[in-house]
Amino acid sequence: ACIEPAEDIMAKASTETTPPVPVPLTRWFAEAWGTFILVIGLIGAAIFASGFNAETNGVGLLGVSLAVGFAVVAAAYSVGGISGAHLNPAITVGMAMAQRFAWKDVPGYVVAQLIGAILATSVLALIASDGPDGFLVNAQAAGFASNGFDAGSPAGFGLVAVIVTEIVFTAVLVWVVLGVTDKRSLAQFAPLAIGLTLTVIHIVTIPVSNTSVNPARSIATAFYGGALPMSQLWVFILAPLAGGLLAGFTYGKMFTRKTSK
Image 1: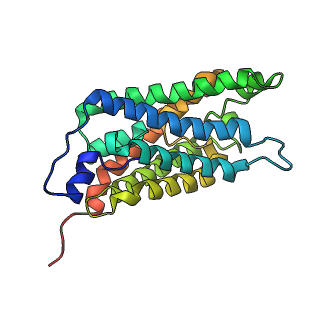
Image 2: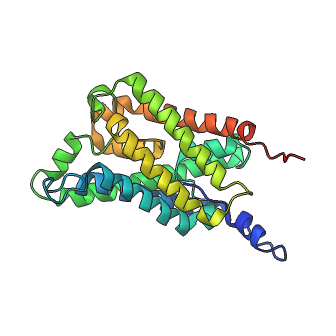
Image 3: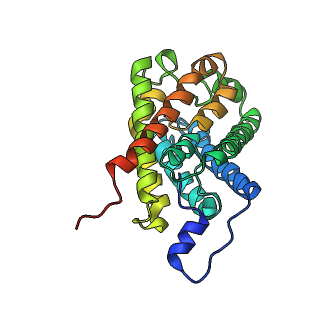
């Protein structure tokens, strides 16, 4: 998710004062914390709640999709005014490609996002280790909610289908992010729009690839998911990044800022 940094939002609200821009370390911490919220909400729901007592209490695909949407809204409102709440390397590179974020700041954001995501799955693994007998082992044997194709896909979709899915739906996500954070939009509603978009994306694509659209999320789960997710991880790094770059490159051409006379 991504909302405008504090300096952009406040500039709209008042022309009398210009608030200070948070220092890089503060912004990195905000990105790590926001990504932690996103990943622990999404993967926690997938591991602990999606199939729990499946006949009566499992939240299923819809519940996991709603969990990620709610988590993004919470994270974006929490840290959006500090870092912009990218929470996703694909969004960060897409924003940079669209000239809405400095390329020099991309590495720091991506590292922070990776740290936050891996900390989240590490906490989940720690909780699972004290679960019922074999819970953590079974969760890891099932891939620890990792992404995949062929045998790694929840419904057995192949490599081409997964690559197309990840590129297209990541591009959709980044197009929405760029749209709702455009200076012509109402920035205060950006987290809601992005959270709903991610919910819809997960409803559609969980059966195909278990939904990445976020390399940090994929790396963090593959870290605990075993050999198969690690061997297929390259797809869920390259395809979402390609989708983010595609959206960033095309957004300005699709939605010019010029007004008709």
